[in-house]
Length: 483
Image (cartoon, rainbow, N blue to C red):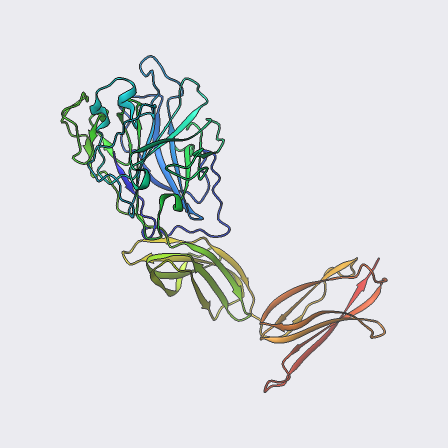
């Protein structure tokens, strides 16, 4: 039972940027926000040939943990498996107090909850309820079907908190990707707080299978929590397959009551090789951290420089951000560094100004680095830069026009800008702009639907006469309204 420590704050810089693809729970986890967590390492020599477990993906988004378990589970029971084999998921939250590593994990209940209490309802000995993990477990989940091929049942067991030792059906859905909310009543989780869906994975790398969304609040998680995860194909009788992620089971199926803490099959059970080593450990990864959660990342220009702004929602062990720039087809180069805030649950804003630039198109990204050397990249932002060394009023376009036209202008410094429209007699028709503007390039649209055809003039007046230079820029251009 190879365990995954999904520690939600430092190891990965998973970015929740506003334009990032939002996760849709439909059993298809091909959204770009998903990241590969782990893959099965062996060649599937165990039971359940109609079951596959190949990859596990995850994403942190909007205070939810999303899991995508690429799998195919037994569609219907058969002669050898009168109760279907399915998927097992084990989860630990560091701030909760669950069953410690090496504890007996199976629970007793007269209702069938698949492998969670599988040894009872099929008449097998009680030792089938003695499987053990090599990490603390707060929650166990079972995903399986029954004699009705379209049904997918999702059951849970809480091994921590108020509902420690409780089994509950979280909900039922189909194999077509329809999302469901559960549970139906408050229990392990609050009513309709957990979302899930399922589609059979037709091949490895299909990005289809069981998809799950759990809000942090339902796990009583905090921004500094670590999460551990393990997934395995397991029979309703609590007979474990060799398909485990992560982990490398080498001795055939792990059988009943595998002891992953000591990496052996329980010598007192009817396993294929009682007392034999299960496979190659360790059965856990290095911790993953709740990412530095980047909420925004943008680029603007003031006419002389490019200004990058970004903000974070939470940070843990954040050393800082390398600012990397790319021009055209060249490679990214580091042009600056901004220190992070270390560990904080408070939002923070950052800025960086890139100076001395030529006109052209620029691309930027952030390389966030933890104190342990781990790093991850942000999405890329793109900006067209044009240095404004003088006041410019461009010819309107289109010209002639009907009924609207665009007027572009540029100012090299912060200025009070006034743009007015006049007719051929010099009468003021309309004021389009009258406000203080920072340096930059601007575009406005003038609508003349209620005016007659003819020649009109537009005038730009900009500058700050109260400054030491006292200079004011004025330019007038002609445009033609033709209806």
